[in-house]
Image (cartoon, rainbow, N blue to C red; front, side, top):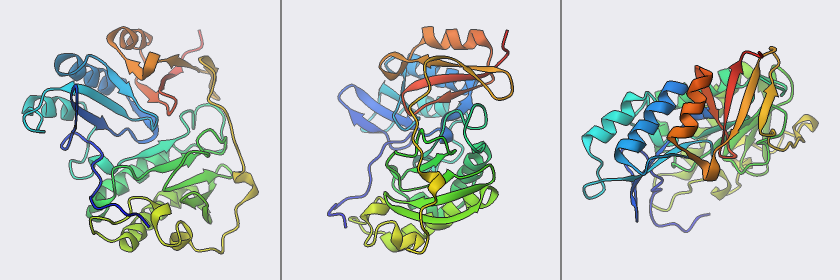
Length: 292
């Protein structure tokens, strides 16, 4: 059990973290997938109001730093500008949309396309008022069976064992049932509700599944042996060109020190992609390019 005496202070847009260089805002990007125009819009916010760059995080989320504030509150124009990007569909749930997924899922390799699961999970999280109580550090990790994010610390998650079946996870060592892929998001949301029921709502309540009495087994039980197909591990994809399963290609681009600046963004825009993918390795994937 945890010995904390306060609630989670993980930053968001409406509750920024106040650092030495100004306010810090973290924007959750479920699965790392977002419209290119939204990323460009967030960079404009950083250039007009912050330190000039969008910072990529190890959870495939985005941060803007160096923002002016008034006793911890951002100016309305900054909040409005971030909201205009479309990256914060729920003010009440902005800090709980922490969903990491295999960045190339559905495009190159992997056993299953987890993009529909990510969308379904995000929508279900935002639709349930009770789930706004999840800590901002509570993390869902969805691995498509290749093993690139399977080794990450997590609260809840899954590993694909085939194109249409996944095994659920809870905490470091808890393995749950195998379910159909189109039932996975609903099952994960059910486990998140069960976590909140067991964690309680006191100042010292657990933030993470492994802090519960009984850890992950308290949520999924102990009658689910780990499927052999979940024993996977993979290194991040190399930088450069990546062949997609549909014959197109993706470009895996470095972002020095995890910083996306105007020069790198202009290089991305020149390729004309409708969407980009932020990775847990603080890099950027530009997918769905014609293989000319």
